[in-house]
Image 1 (cartoon, rainbow, N blue to C red):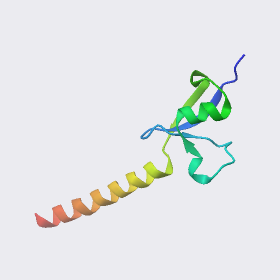
Image 2: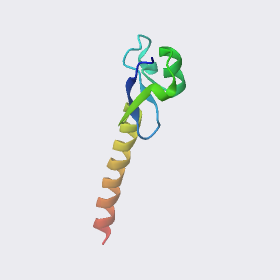
Image 3: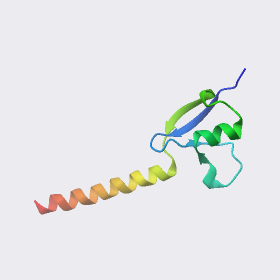
Length: 78
């Protein structure tokens, strides 16, 4: 019988957070393939819960900040 693994998955880039990884910080978010190899599980035994990784969160925040600045400038032109 296989154990199910619950993992957080970035909704934007689809990387998985490997909270049990003892390696470097940049390897905490990895691909499904890397995750299944590390834990020796089948991909269908990984249950995913959506979140956003730090890189995608940072990109989103930058886009939102740029949008606010652009909207302010556009409204001042009217």
